[in-house]
Image (cartoon, rainbow, N blue to C red; front, top):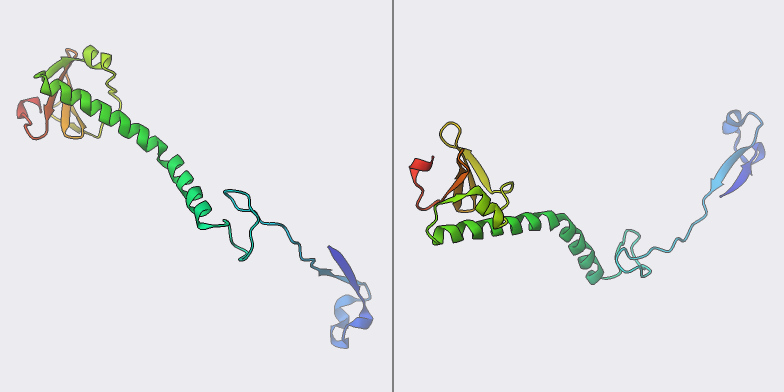
Length: 155
């Protein structure tokens, strides 16, 4: 930045007492022309000073990429829930309402992810995976049922 000296001679008399004989420097702002670039493709931007993208396609692609990154974890959890539901539903369709924990684990059932949980009778916790519910007994068995045909004996 260039500085220009301002002396007593160039100021009116009423403001003379402010300077007390020493020079004061005013800043002459030089307009800097930094080339602005599109956040998506790097093309030079022309137009508004707050413009971030060169076209609507770049803006849409950029925001879609941000949304995909934010929702990646959600997609992983939904995939696990869908897999768990398919396993539980297949067991029910095969007529198995009680299955050993080891058998479900062998089918890659993930016991850590579920849609809801509720406490039943003392010591009996019920886990939900969409419309299928299951309870793990102390003997290592998993009791499975559907919400539509819920049996109160499991609660």
